[in-house]
Length: 198
Image (cartoon, rainbow, N blue to C red):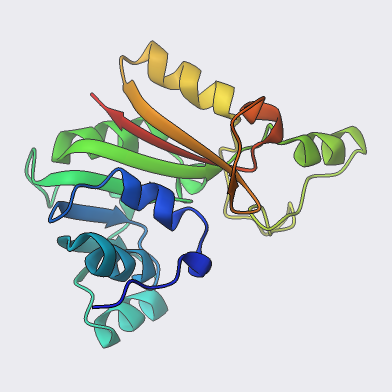
């Protein structure tokens, strides 16, 4: 099977890097299932997506991606403890109302978690704020009045959140324009990808 192009999303390869081959994976807020299909092709994973949007559910079913319709805000009570090797929350963390609950649930049902989110500390975002406007970019494409984002954070915020709750960060990848950022990442990084465990 051919590996799909990573052009679909720059964080896909970073996510796949931390997923052992043949892992059992749960993708929360899976959208149309593109990431799961990418991981099936590149890492031979098995697993499910969880999604609330009817259109995305239909797209998953049409592409043969196993999906469960559920509101993530209600938790993951459908899944037993330790059911998955890895649980992913990709570019959805900032839209969750109860961030702590979803992080705890990820670690309850999975041995490890991966989250990706737009870094609000990115210098272009800071510049927008200094200019008196909310930022709009590829990773934050919404206007202030129609955004699904409720909890924007910087990488420093997220790392502090994990430290205070005993969540171990196993690794991170920071990207800007799809390229890795290795220095001053909270300032120069547009998108953060974190691998963590309990």
